[in-house]
Length: 129
Image (cartoon, rainbow, N blue to C red; front, top):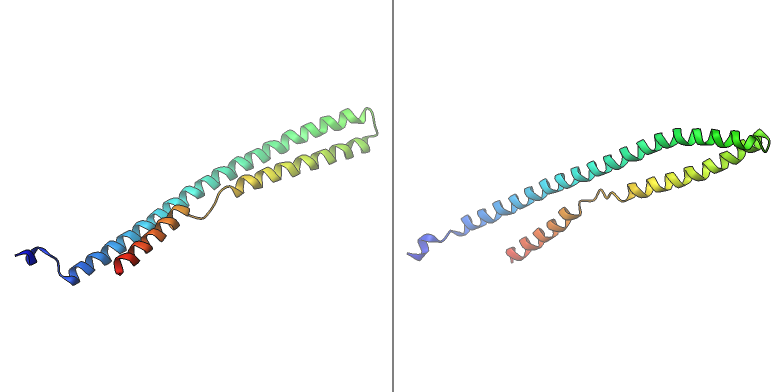
């Protein structure tokens, strides 16, 4: 009577294969979700960076004009423009560096999915033995 409740070997193998397939489908769904989350984060960072750059360009332009006019009262206009240009170049370099640093923080690699896939492969290997 105990034999009637147990599954046959082909049924057990079919169940194992079905479970493994479902695990891998779940991992694919997890990877898609994780990549979408990272894309949204990168999009937000890029939008913020872009808005900051545009507003910074306008503000910097007016500031540079003001500085140039103020300096031209003390030194020749060409020298004032050159001083302001050098200062603007330094500020631009700092802004570009900060923006690149922020974009590098967003990793396109789905770390959680890779880790769980490794665990799943290890689980299947142990079950197959």
